[in-house]
Image (cartoon, rainbow, N blue to C red; front, side):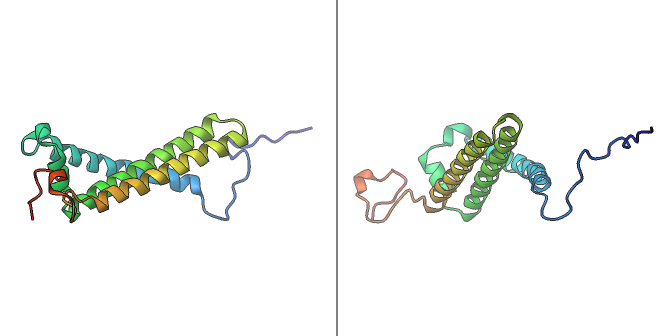
Length: 149
């Protein structure tokens, strides 16, 4: 009686050829977003901590002035979105590795998904609607950077 041994590195189970390979695209996203995040984060740190007066200049007026420019809104928004999705995808991978019951995996991944979506929505709203000098606000409540009308 002879027995055939599979060749080394042959798949334990046949791979499916239909549909999208979401694990592969998640892996690619993690690498690409990681590279982009390094550029965004170091650019953010350089502008906030090294340019001008450094960390001593960061206050309400600094953020208000920065977010009045669409370039910085896009920069910070992109950094927010990429970081949260990158972190959420990393948490999904950890949950797949360490949560053994199907119910626990579904619960934890749902919680991570909800947290990521809520933080992206709130962060995007803050970045895009931030106005340090809202029209019609009482002058005594406005910061010193706002001109009295």
